[in-house]
Length: 94
Image 1 (cartoon, rainbow, N blue to C red):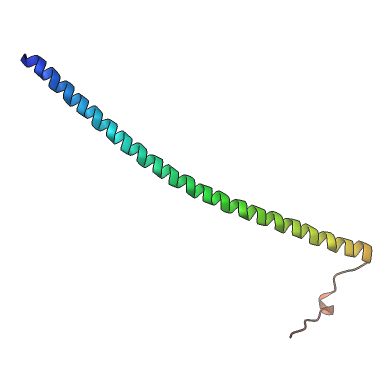
Image 2: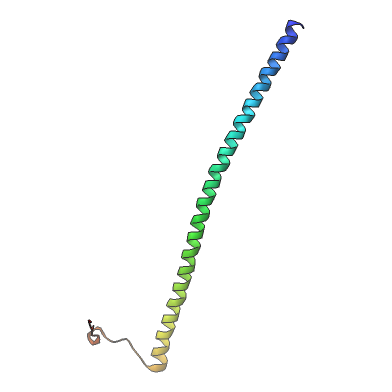
């Protein structure tokens, strides 16, 4: 084999080895990035679920608040009831 042909094969072999190493490093980086993004996704999903629970609790509180104000309005209008003045309130302790 001629000296030039041998160098050509060596160059091709080195180039192929570099390509394989670059591909391997890309796979490792891709896996690492995928795992990092998955952890971020899980964290965000947990935060979303917590916010959904809080949203439902706030909606229930709002509905309850509306119900109380509706009862208070009906008591005033239909029954002529009113809140007592602070001087008329007595606190009974057990």
